[in-house]
Image (tube, rainbow, N blue to C red; front, side, top):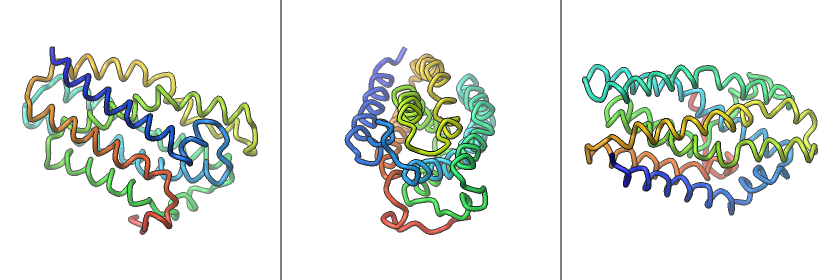
Length: 228
């Protein structure tokens, strides 16, 4: 078993949580003190990357199957694609509770960090090392375990955002389930011995760590353009 890879992934994930805890906008979300505009902004940017998660996971898994590499990992990617399917609808429902129509959400540009995140993971799925997406998945699921439930609980307890009780579906949906997902990922990835694939996983994890905090940067500061 390759425990060093898991230790490195865990360190990257902890570093992301630490970076977000000191990021002013992310900290307000985690503390439940974000206002309606800040929370909606987070949900919109999250929607712009989550809607690609299931398709890209499926693309990576099917490509691995075609390449005949690691059928267990390939099936895990396909399985995760099914698990993540439709989660963008949770975000649309949360935003609808905040007064946002789907048309308004779609018309709001994805920020630079989200565009880079989607393009990076599309590259690894289509032309790079498809296993790498599991490094991205590890980071996001670890973050959900550590902060999603806490953020939902505190937003609702504070109650400063109108209708917020109906606008935390996405956060709550990931808070509980992702604990099992992290353990499952660690179990499967600990058997991965190819150095090139290990490095690809870590590179995707590090890319996610670098990009995710900028998701909280206002779109106008990120130089965002609409990508359709």
